[in-house]
Length: 393
Image (cartoon, rainbow, N blue to C red; front, side, top):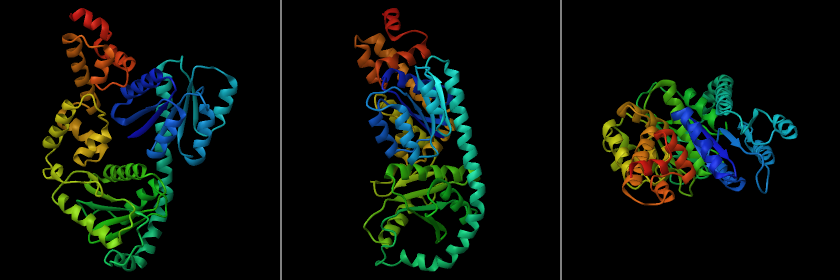
């Protein structure tokens, strides 16, 4: 699953591009929009972004300058410039950046979608090449940690140890003992810096993650790690996260173990931050149909709210990509399609049975703005909201 950010100071254009990308790639992508450079900077600080689709001419700072700065901190970021100006100076400067594409807004949607497909393939190729290089390092690292294993294990059984207080701890438990140290270290090093490590304890693995990134970013990367391991071997797992804390290692480790007991009989992909969890009522029953039923009920009662995959997954402690897959297996439809169909059905009802303004209806149905609502409604129903109302009334 790839995370795409669209940046354009014209809200209608940004929302339209987001819709086009979501329609084409479906469950493969999570698409967000920012309507200016400052909001984009804040978003990137708190989220993992794989592909950036960015306008060039924007107030305060150009998209070219913004992306040039970004690449210094995020060299693996793939960028597509989307502009209304066919200016050679823009093209020349854009193409000097690595893995950057340049698309005109006047071009057919297929041009942009084709560039996004290319970026996805580049990301997949980069990961494959990186993993091949890490294989030998993983084997060597395993030998190193075997020598220090007893010393490190003791830190989690000592109330006076604060060795990991500045690190995020991740307790991983798998429903099979086939997972090896090398496999986990391989993917951990792929997603995080190589100074993070894996420690086997009592049949599970404790990962200590060194990162100065925002906790949201660390959490999202941990979810990607869980999904990568699942796609590699199809073995269910529980990933329990404890953010960096002043508590000693003994207390944090036991907090993670206590939370793990709630998952002891489960065979799905669960993920939770133990510092934020209130109760485990959502995970007392692991049958797919009950989990999906809860999601469906929440969607039906909250159509005006943000129903992102991440938010829905947190309701039931599922890994987001895994929830998307399970929803399709149980219901036969994609999660995004289900939400959109419910929102359009509600819109039809309100257009027919009320005299509310189109703007108010779009908000009640969870659309970002009336323009986005109009675009989606036209594609789904074949006519505009206004014409639909006139015809029905």
